[in-house]
Image (cartoon, rainbow, N blue to C red; front, side, top):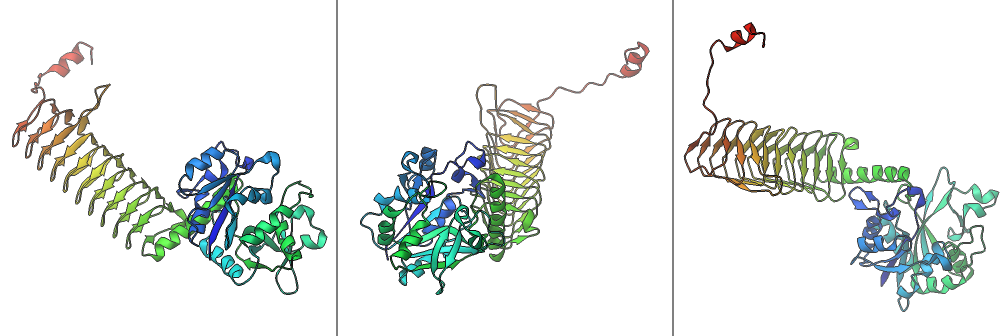
Length: 458
C-alpha cells in the first residue's frame, strides 16, 4: 500500500530559550528532527512532508534533499489540525496511508509506526498511538467505546472531572487512510479555548461518519516530546541507553554504560572495551579488540583494530591498528597515524602523516609533516611550521632518529636513516645516514660561581 508521512515542525519552540530552532537541537549526534525522519524511513517513506513555519529556512537547509516542505501560515490559523491542512496539496490524488507525527519526538521508533500502519491496512480509518500515564496532566485524554475503539480525544483544558481521571493519553502520532483524512480536514473547527484547529477532532469526525479509530499503546518513554532543555536532557539519557545497549548486544564491552557517552552516528567493533568518562561523537569508527580508557573524546575519528587510546582527544583524524595513543595526546584534524605506532603523553599532531612503527613518545609537537616508517622522535621535539604568516611542511625519512629537544624549522627534509643530535635546531636538509648537530659548543668556566658570590652578584 502506498505510504507517505507528515512531520510537524512549524512551532517556535519558545520554551527552549534558544536561537536554534527546536527540532534542530542536537541529540546524541543528530538533530532532533532526524529521528522522526528515520522512523518513517523504517516503514518505507523516503521523503516525508515536513511542515515548517518559524525559522523555516534553517529547517529546509538542514533537511534539503531528504524531505519536501509545506508552510504553515499563522495568519490563517494555528494548531496541529491547521498544520496538516497546510500539507494537503502533497496528499492530493494519493491513496493508501499517511503517518502524522511531530518533529520533537525523537524517541519514537519505526516499529511503533508499523503497528499503526497494520491497523489501518486491516480496515481502520485511523490508528493512533496512546500511552498510560501515572500523571496525565497536560495530555489529551483518550476515551474508548465499549469495543475498545477510540471514541474521542479530549484536550485537558476541555475535560470534565470524569475525563480528567482517565490515565490513557494521546501520544499525538497517527496513521490515517489518506482519503479519510482529506475528508475530515475541511470539517475541523477552532471553537475551543485556544482557538486552534486540533487534529484530534478528526477522530470525532471520523467516528461520527461511522469509521473505526484504533488505539495502539506504547510506553510513555517512546512518545516523550521535547519542549525545553530539561526534556532534551531526559530524552538524551534515554537515547544514550538505547545506543549503548545496542552496541553491547553487538559485542562491545562497556564498563559503566551510564557514564559513557556515544553518539548515534558512532560505530564500534566487537570485543572493544570502552571505559566510563568517554565521549564518542560524530562519524567516529572504532575497530575490534580496542581499549578506550577513561577520559577520551573522539569526534569523526577512525581507529583501527587492536588499538589502545588513553585519556586523549582525537578530532577528524585516523589511527591505524595495534597502535597506542596517550595518555593526554591530542590528535588534531588531518592527523594520520599508521599501524604499530606509539603516540605518547602530551604529544600533539596536526595535519601530519605518521608512518607504520614510528614512535612519538612524549612532549612533542608534529605539525604539517610527513614521517616515514620506523622513526623515533625523542622528548620535546618541535616541528616549527609557522612563520607568522604561512605554514610550511617538513618530511622525515624511514628509520631516522630525532634526539630530544630538537627543533625542525620547516621546510626541511631529513632523509632516511639520518640522526639528529639532542638539542639541535635544524634549518637545513639532512642527508641520508648523516648525523646533524646544530648547537653551540659547551664551555665550562671554572670558579665562576665562587667569584660571582664574592662580588655579591649571586
